[in-house]
Image (tube, rainbow, N blue to C red; front, side, top):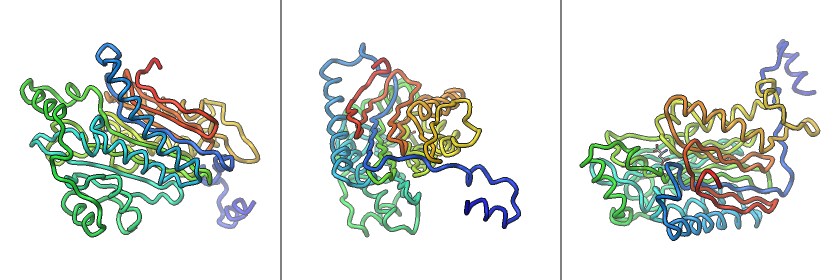
Length: 354
Ligand code: ASP
C-alpha cells in the first residue's frame, strides 16, 4: 500500500521488479546450514574406504559445529565461521592448513564472508601469515570501513586486530607440494592436478531468518602473478542477502567470476516473485510472501551452473534460502558436502550419485 502510494507520488506507473518483489518467507525458529569442502573429479574408484570415511568425518565435524550454533539460537555469521574454522585447520581441505601451493612454492590464502542482514561483507586475498583467513574476513566486516583487503596490507590490518598468525610451515603439506611439483614437471594445468578443488564454504540461515555465507581457499595449484579466484570476490564465490539466499561456490574460479555466480543466483531468487521465474512455477505464495522452495532454489542454482559449464567451467555451489531450503548444485562428479536443518536433515556426501 505504502509502496504503491510512494510510486504514484513519484509519478511512476510501473514499480521496478525489485520493489515489487515480495519478501521471502521464513518460519520463526527454522534454521538451516550447508557446507562444502570443494567440488571436482571424485570417484569411488580413486578413493579408499578409509579416505572416504576421513572426509565424511571431517565434514560431519564441521557441520555439527555450525549446526550447534544455529540450534542454540546463534547467528548465521557465527555458524558460518564455526564450520569454516574447522575446515581451514584440517589439512585435507584447500584452505588454511593444507592450502595448495603457488608457482613460487608458497601459500596465498583468500577468504570472504557476507552478512545477509545488511549485506555487509569482508574479504581478503593473498594473505600468507594469517592462520585462519575467515577470521580476518570477519574482522574486515566488523571494522566496516572497507570490504576487500589484499596482501601485506591485509596482514598489517590482521596484526592491528590481534588476529593469530602462523609460520609458513603450518600451511604446507606434502600432497600439496607434490601436486605443484607434478604440475611443473609434466607441464600440467591446475585442473590436471587439482582433481578436487578443496575450497571450503558454508551458508547458513539462523532462527531469526538471517542469512550468511563464507568461503575460504588457497586457490589453484601453481597460481602466479597475484591471481585471485572467485572465492573472496563478493558476488562471484560468496554472497548473502536476506531477501533471497546465501551462496558459497567452489570450482574453476575464472568462470565463476565471469558469471558472477553467487550474486546471479541470489538475484534470480530475489526476483522469483516476478514473472522472471514463472517457468519454474513452484514458488508458493503465502500471505504475500514468496516461499523459495527447495525445487525453485535447485532450479535456479542448476541454471546458473549450466551457464558456468557453457563457458567451460566446472564446480558447484551450496545455497540456503529463508524458507530453510538447503541445496547443492554441481557439474562435477563429486562435491564434499553436508547439510543440516531444524527439520531434522543431517547428512554428508561426496559423490554425485549419493
Ligand atoms: N574457486 C577456487 C579458486 O578459483 C578454487 C576452488 O574452488 O577450489 O580459487
